[in-house]
Length: 442
Image (cartoon, rainbow, N blue to C red):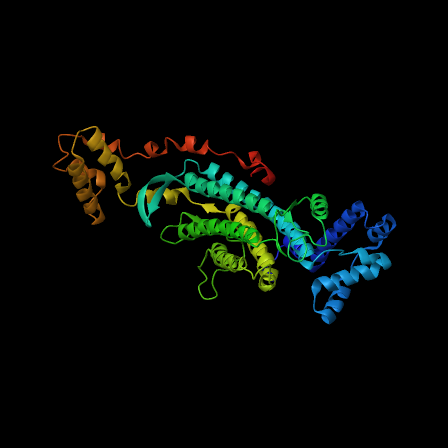
């Protein structure tokens, strides 16, 4: 566990008490299924439902003696019930309870993630709309490329987060299965009808075929979906870190009153939250590797997966949830500097308009592309060497003189040309309040 980064919503799901509570839900559902089958007397079922319960301390006390958590739990529950407790865990193996209950908790945790993701989507959408037409230089390889808008940059985050949400919904569907099929999946001591009734009561689908466990590719899908969402948040955080660099300074994280950036340098305002998100994304990715290695178990199962799942599931969800809440706070309080964006856009003396000039020379003035490219490039290289503004150098170029006037060239050095489809691109997306519920994404 990483207590510093735990959130109350996730802590309640992954608590030991909730683990036992979910186990009890499965056990009681099985008892009710057996009662419908006629093998559990109605009066005993009534006693079980009225008296069933557990005490965490007592379960741990029994476990310290028997060294088996499910046996300890079942023994504790049976103690409370009395003679009718003999029907608890009838025909079941431990993984029938544990894996079915784990599906309940994983699904519940995914729902919490989805709610936090929706809040992040709201913050991203609001930021994109606010800066829909804020000019900014686009960069490829870290080098100035062509004009974009800051809102369009942010919209790509929104689009990627929507894909993450669909991946999470698919993972939720994959993990919403239960199994009550016995020690090796043959239903030897518990017919399929019991499984059907238990899963129906719990809102799960019976796993079509299982061994002693639900196969771990399903759980790996969950961890991958979390990791992929973490990668998207890392992408956003990495961009914010670059934008906060002193030489760029187009956006900065919120810096609260009284906050200090460095023990040595009082002037520092560092992107610590974005850096934290990047670091956590690395850890989240590592959990996927562990989850992948859990897929290949021996024969019908071993328990090499069990120990690490007690760590990677709660920690993975804690990390992802904390990252979502942190990034949402960063974006809601982000300081954006349009003047600095405008200044950086003009930093290279008009070079960002080179492709438009090239195409105009070819399409409108009939100059061979190779000749036009050479003319544009030689003047661009001169600008890189500090020899003047791109427009001025082009206007006096020997190839262009007499073919295209300076005023005609100047018309090519405008940003609106690059932004004429921004509305159309934005129109492809629905606002967060219009998005379907997670259960309707698959």
